[in-house]
Image (cartoon, rainbow, N blue to C red; front, side, top):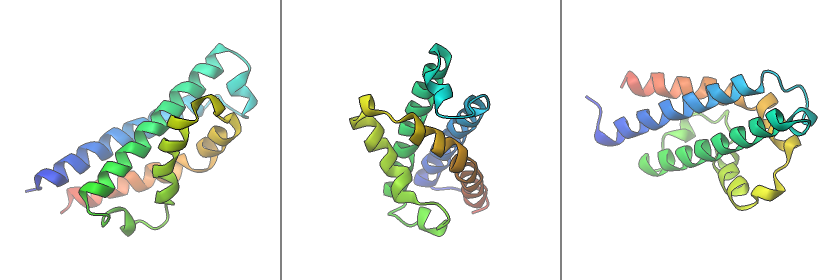
Amino acid sequence: MHSYKDRIIISTLEDIKFSLELIKERCESINSSDDFLDDKDGLLKLDSISMRLVAIGEGFKNIDKLSDSKLLSNYPNIPWKQVKGIRDILSHHYFDLDAEAIFDICENEISELLSTTINIIKDMSEK
């Protein structure tokens, strides 16, 4: 039986997984940072991806607090400080949103973060 904290962590991880899958789906038609800026659809994707990244960063911050900073450190392949920090950058500097930075995250970070999130869920579910 999972503790209350573990159930909250697993639920948060499931929400993060859903958001990461949405980001991957929304990035499928984006081939460069310019695609975000070319039309209203691109801007809508940029905004929605950015908001999902804020939620993901906040989710991982909460997981870190709930696990007393012990869970995420078991998965050193992810730069957790940057993952959690993207929330602050996007939340506090939204009008400085950099399409190139978001494109880079979509291209180079989301897949590994998604697979690691799935692994954490699996590992926690087997506890």
